[in-house]
Length: 331
Ligand SMILES: NC(=O)c1ccc[n+]([C@@H]2O[C@H](COP(=O)([O-])OP(=O)(O)OC[C@H]3O[C@@H](n4cnc5c(N)ncnc54)[C@H](O)[C@@H]3O)[C@@H](O)[C@H]2O)c1
Image (cartoon, rainbow, N blue to C red; front, side, top):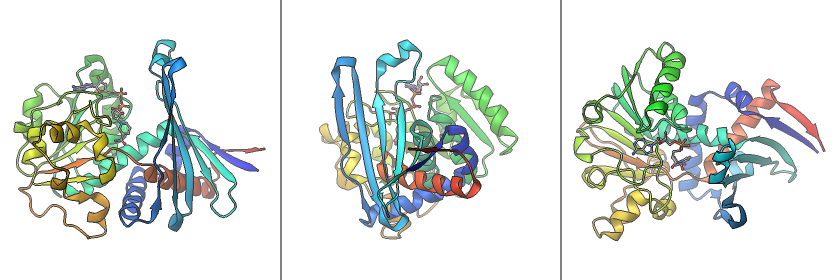
């Protein structure tokens, strides 16, 4: 048995963020058309070590993408100087059942999560969007930034994070990497209110349990991505924004009950899931309509799904084989 092992650097070299965005669009379309086999993830409680281990399998027959991502959540790892969310992706050949590749699951998650916001922004944001506010400067932030830079010709990006050290360090690093490449000014957000009022695109990707910005500040025509909330007690998007949005979309409707952004409004009886226009995949397959004019406010919520992991991992594997990247181990 031959397994191709790919680390994050190799994965970044073989695939471009625009290719990941296009792969995500195909994955979401297939998911919404019922063509993906994505069983409910299995969650093992490892209470002895204050951990959880999650197993996310999936199969997309049309793409020959079959595999499983393992993600664990071990908060105590941080004290030991290790990541609290270690992850591995394992791809399997759907023709033979043989495992064919192992790759860095943490980087894969950053890549596909950045690209899902990129895909939503590409489909839903105004074509001439110029200003972007990114809230949250943690592990996911860089690819959230690059995905949006890759699909819109932006002039200015504001970065906000409640942690000043994270914010300053991130702004410096992103300026070095992307301001020349994309001809854009990337700066620290001084007034969140002013930045949001100026923005055509806003992404919140934080671990916040309360709204990261005031929904009243969001102007006509803006597009907002909500990325961080994945448990009922996390609600980083102000309900005022969701209630005033003209159109609301998500990656997968089934998982919206996991997101506090929606659950908390439903519990207060101020929102019903039927107010969500539909899945991004349905917009892609033209089953439902997206933005209709430059005055509408659009909101997109992602909770993530294994269909994105298997699809992007398969693309990375195919490119790596073609370009001779990675190390092969024989078992
Ligand atoms: N939707 C998906 O598919 C998906 C995928 C991966 C991660 N996530 C979620 O995205 C969130 C961010 O992930 P990460 O890896 O970047 O986390 P992280 O812990 O590396 O960074 C989170 C950042 O958010 C900042 N923050 C917290 N509260 C804030 C607030 N009120 N305003 C501004 N900044 C605030 C923190 O200071 C930190 O810098 C997590 O909740 C994670 O579970 C979602």
